[in-house]
Image (tube, rainbow, N blue to C red; front, top):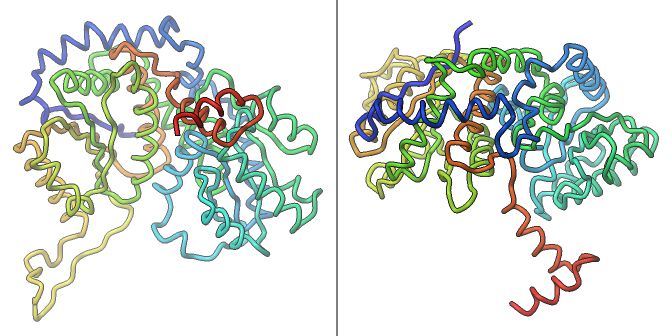
Length: 447
């Protein structure tokens, strides 16, 4: 089977091969060794590192069995979670689904996966609950603690609604909890109510959790092959977890850090396939939450081309030269569509009549890369043969391992997120949560 590829030729006018190789030897290889030996900061969160290899077949079979139970009893399944408990599954499902799947009715044995708990939108939750009235639905609730505000609100509302619609006993059969093995409010509730549960291991952080039940269960409910997804990740693990001259994870991590040191402070992840929009959202969390520490880190942004060439294209071409692009290029489309000829030719498109739409898209991609590089925007190109479970598994593990390497090159702990707690503390104080009385007084004084 082919593998994803990384090409850095279009960065060499900004940083040299010698600089890249020097940083790879001095920093990337030691960083990979830190990950493998578990000697770096955050080493208690390395469970993702060999997860594809260590996930047993029977565990995947159990996830598939629970997914099939939900598929056979529900027309809609709401996955409740935020951050890494949401974005990985959303990214894979959107990449594999028909682009208009949301507009087609649910069919028996083929439910739609919806998402909640990823925001505190009152209208969103109201409209979701209105939609689910008189619908056959189930819930996957994902939270280590069970007390994270956004998913906890959504779950409280949806649980009440489900119990009202089908009764407490039947609702208990349609709720699956993915949570801590022993502790927390959700674990306690799941035990008391008899929910089917899967465990979020202590050594896997949320943004690295897509290849655990956190991501695998919603993906399986949506009807996709999680065994192929894990196999793709395992193929990338075998290829890149060991030091080698062709280690594309080392190459990507090193190149982006060379560009950062050369003043390129923002990385824009580019796709030319709209199915990858949420993959860009997952990638933003992975790198933003992992690297943004100690007033350091490359700022992660994402765009959908050619759509955003008509909005962001001007800035990227001619704006401040502090950016570089990483382009995900999908070699083969799943379908073929040729452009027809038109006798009147009022739109002037007969010169491309007979060409496939994807050929035009590829020329837009190539033309844009040339223009941006000529305009001072270095480009890294990641080539993916096609959008399948196996290649997405490769891509997920590639970015995860590269992220761990890159964080250590930056000399930060890639596996914590101390800055995320600040807004929570302020929100709790403003809402007068018990235990926050002094913080409430202090924050009120600032207003």
